[in-house]
Image 1 (cartoon, rainbow, N blue to C red):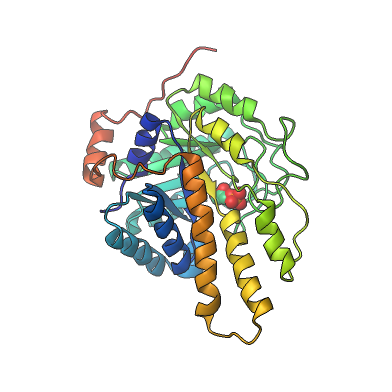
Image 2 (tube, rainbow, N blue to C red):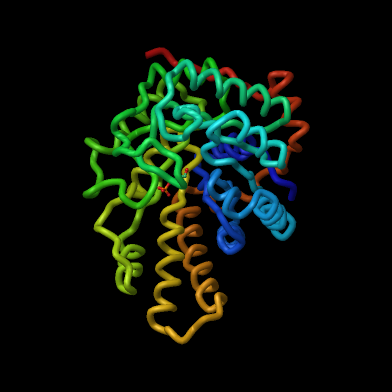
Length: 349
Ligand code: 13P
């Protein structure tokens, strides 16, 4: 199957009332793990690459690896997404490479660290939307600022400094025409999200629900959504790692989000932990090993297990064959003739 538009994938998820995991990749084994999990669970999937991943793997390697996934698994709809684009140029380069979706994270300035003004965010996001939609490419925007830093991108902090204001979310969606909206509800990138199991004082599901009430048809995106399960932390620490005790976003909170308009769920850290634990275990218990396949194979299997579990928990499992892909050219026509709405439905307060 050719790569599909993320907009189509999320529109279908909204119809079916489920969420779709967006898993970060840097290398071949991670792409293979995701595809094996998608096949195992019969799931559509979003594969995403940050700027850091694109630099690490080199653009053309990563692009062709994901294309290989679409050739090898023709029954699985795959959207290829730029995670946290920091500028118009970054998004343009992804679109020109062949990504079917981009995130313009205008919540931060181009340095990827400093929070921007609402006006700056609207201006750069709208510019990306106009360029992308002309080419049939989906756009995710962000309003409010996430916590933490991932691959050098992020404002740091706990994630509570810039929680999304629902009125601003409405205005932002109306002014930009984004297909998907990432919001800040107290989550942050990386392993250290919460110092105890999160409750409503640090994980603002009430804000998410308020935004969904005002924007009932807008696809919401939860970033920083790794659950950081204790069993994955334990494997790392059992074999020489030094992770401090930490909590992520409980799966039941993500499921509450999915019942309230969340269609895309970003997960990276859980997969990093799973792979690192598996690699540590081999190197710790069998120090004579030196063939990378001896540890990359268990690492790939460990990631597949986590991804398959999330696909089932998010509800995308079983939905790979629900729809035929619409070509990117047809999607571009849809944006141009208004069949694909870019004006959000706004409910009264
Ligand atoms: P985690 O660090 O929680 O996996 O979040 C990943 C993410 O949001 C990527 O954009």
